[in-house]
Image (spheres, rainbow, N blue to C red):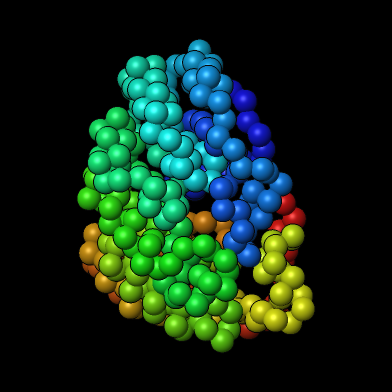
Length: 291
């Protein structure tokens, strides 16, 4: 297996074999993200991708899960996807799940028939970044898509039988827009009703425009208490029956796990308990992750 680092994957793919089919992110302009700033987006040659799968077969006795990277691998043309998923099916009969990152732009480029075919070939779930349900926030962070485009893409994938894991980032609107960001994000997530919802907490990263704006005083980052308050607002407004909600990312202050809507009140109580912690009001030392 050959990788062009840094390499990223969702927390739930910790024990998956990672197949790097694309390098970087085709959009690569979000103001908060530095994951792929050092990479020029490209699709790896199909021959190399299939060689890596053959290498993995020789190296591992059993591979039950495969995650296809980088940032939005779904953008690959259908002929490449057919070859990759077909090879996985042939080489790894024990594989129970194939997943990938995706963007609303990727989903827009694929028809529902394309997505149904990918699901039939083994693509079980995609990870989709909503980030925010606020059009203003999406515009401010240069997401490059609208809320409606994200919701439409998600519903198209669901109609094709592909499971959804959708992420929202607490704190993206700063202090001035935190309540609107939370409420509108809850509304968008409720409309999508994904199988999984992942809550993340904004981390200011070196080299990003958002960090530069914070340093210049243009962006008011939330305090630890405000992060939890915003998550509480979101969950209180969330109505997504059956969605498994997790805040198990390293960025989060409180680890939440439950199934909507039956565990909603328990998760709200967990946040209320955490909000009683006086340590949340200590002077906040900004941490800039140096990646």
